[in-house]
Image (cartoon, rainbow, N blue to C red):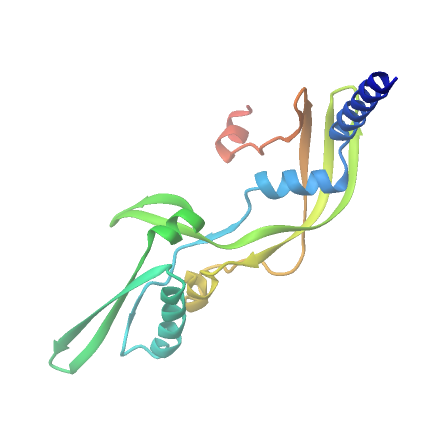
Amino acid sequence: MKKITIVFTVIFTMTVFSCSSDKLTNDVAIKIIETNFYKDCEQKLNTITFSIRNDYKKVMESLKEAEKLGLVDIKQTTTRDIQGSYINIKAIPTQKAISEYGGKQENSMSGKRAYFKVATVEVVEIIGISINKESNTATVRFTYKLNPTELYNIRWSKYHSQSPDCPKGNIEDEVTFIKYDTGWKMEQPKSELELMLGK
């Protein structure tokens, strides 16, 4: 009798787990979106400054804070000319900064231009989930916000007003999920090139 009870309990537990893992709840959707939704705010870092700039002290405060966190190494040199001398500061992102916050890279005239995640996505709420049982897909509408990372205070746009800053406040968006044998997965949005080619 004990053996039958144990077998029944195991089968019942497996059945419940299987059913619940197939269900697309708000909590499941949030986890999938935050893992796969690539709309983090990426920018170049403001890593060069001079003592003759008006914002020198403000920049240095932010760079020294990043240095304390192990995210940059600060190099200092002195330049002398006919007008006098001034300090040159160059901060180099560390391996920690690259591994934790490294983003895309672009080619430029001066070489590779690196971008870093200065704010990352946090889902605020799921507005609604619409499931299409025939196609095994779901449309998920949600709001998210961008949370500053440890590099936020040395982001490029903070000291260059002509550059676009990270969006603030809650942002509404929509993604498509596809149900596979292994569970729900988020469909990655098509690139601009794929949209142009009609893929």
